[in-house]
Length: 146
Image 1 (cartoon, rainbow, N blue to C red):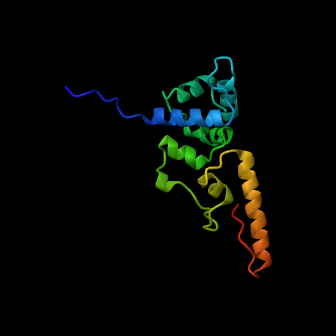
Image 2: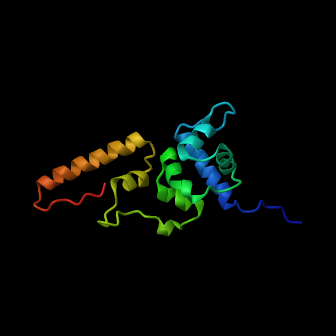
């Protein structure tokens, strides 16, 4: 008899694991029954406490209408949240600014592994400063993509 293997992780389970980790990284105490983290996350995302609990447990995916606020609450990009939910493929994830075709400083920061909003802000400021310096050495005005 062959050993039993657990079934593949569902989209809801994978998304719940990702959101749980992101919530902890963002400072929500979702593990303590009295920590208030689930309630705070629900309020920040405009979701019900029950929906957040089901999402974190990997039981269900939230309605996509909540994804933008959820991404803000978790300090992750909307694109990453959509990919992790399985609603869009990783190849369809937007990594450039469509107006210029350039990668944004925020996308670059996240691609480098920065997650703390303060670190991302500092990275964006540094990129802006470097672009200003580069502009001094050329007649061509730079395109803003950050």
